[in-house]
Image 1 (cartoon, rainbow, N blue to C red):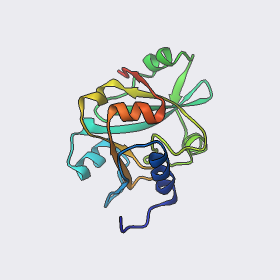
Image 2 (cartoon, one colour):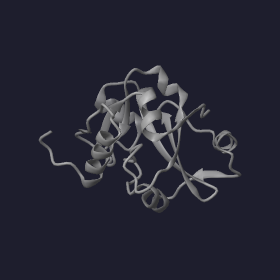
Image 3 (cartoon, rainbow, N blue to C red):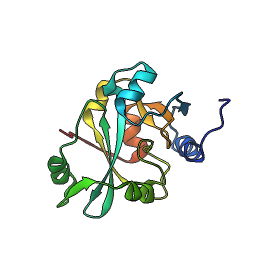
Image 4 (cartoon, rainbow, N blue to C red):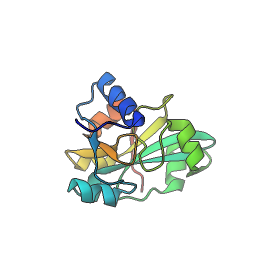
Length: 158
């Protein structure tokens, strides 16, 4: 890759290599803060985008990798995660938990392990695109690989 990667993307690329993931970081021409903008740039279905959503689950970070075609039911999520309350995290909470900005949170490359739930609908796509640590970066992966590299739990999110 000829473009210089953002330091967050370098950390994610390193984590991907260490975890034996197959995908390489791809730099997008424009920021991709939503699944729709990422899908448009990649030429794929919005459902093949793995949105990385950080929630505040009783004060602890919870990463939910959800199909870009879904909205997360936070009450279902709280029951599934076994916590009393789940709410969208603030940008400061997200950065503290992941070291990455909203719109670019990768499934890996965080300062410490973040409990992760993976939307079962992502299994419907052979290739899934996940954020690479910065709003301009993504990487290709698959459902089973996401489960493995995040030590994630498969769940229904809606």
